[in-house]
Image 1 (spheres, rainbow, N blue to C red):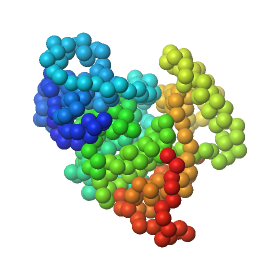
Image 2 (cartoon, rainbow, N blue to C red):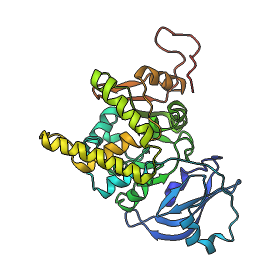
Image 3 (cartoon, rainbow, N blue to C red):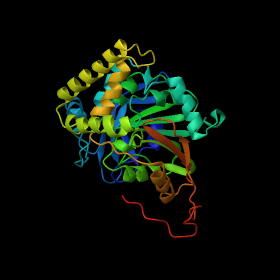
Image 4 (cartoon, helix red, strand yellow):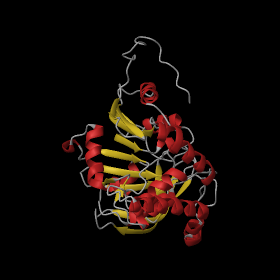
Length: 360
């Protein structure tokens, strides 16, 4: 963790500022900054403590990792701090698979295509990016975060899963930072990001709108918030046959021990791969990409579906201008983007009326 990140980090429980206790540090070869490899972040008043390990701040209030405590027992013995209890779910297996299988595409898109889509869907000009701060909220493998940083802005890749450790290990850009934490308790100062993107993540949290509302508060006035969410498939085969079967399977598989989840994913992914070979589907993804796709299909504890109308209301309720539907030709979901610029009233049939209530 480079010290320049400390300005944006906050205690996720109290939003207090943090100071760093450095245990192991080095000079980052990419930026020339001091890079804290191992250490602690401690809040000013409440004395909550969060580990920095492998160069990544772990901003989860569920205790310090056992391996970290064992490794640094003597260093932390004299420090006064407290740790609150919490629980969390991560997509670690999915993104560890992405790195270990050396997948070069995500959801069928290359990194270059994902960058082009970022510019298109956020209506961003590359010339505007230098000196901006972008939050990749739910960065997964972290590869897009790094690719964005190479375009000029400062980027924070934020995720609950352990893919951030793989991303930090492979990091080459001095402008990208990785942080592990929970989107429902983000460890950042409010209103500091020029752009927040959350691509296919919010619908995997316990309740999508409360998470949407929390993440939206990180966008500065005039900044942009982009989300991509699932909607229920509209075709008969997808919406009435395939998706209900997969949803029923997910409800069972997500509660199994991890080794059984991995086995189910391997069986289903390899079955799809064999089918693609038999039918000679030239545009079918290779096995490494299929494994990641199947992890996302079968293992998440939560998977919610929404509509553009519903999300447009969320933007209005959280102080954003009228959103733009960025694409509608994806059979699985849709993207929307809006600027943080509160509207006094909706421009439609409710013009001038009190804002409608959104269910949490």
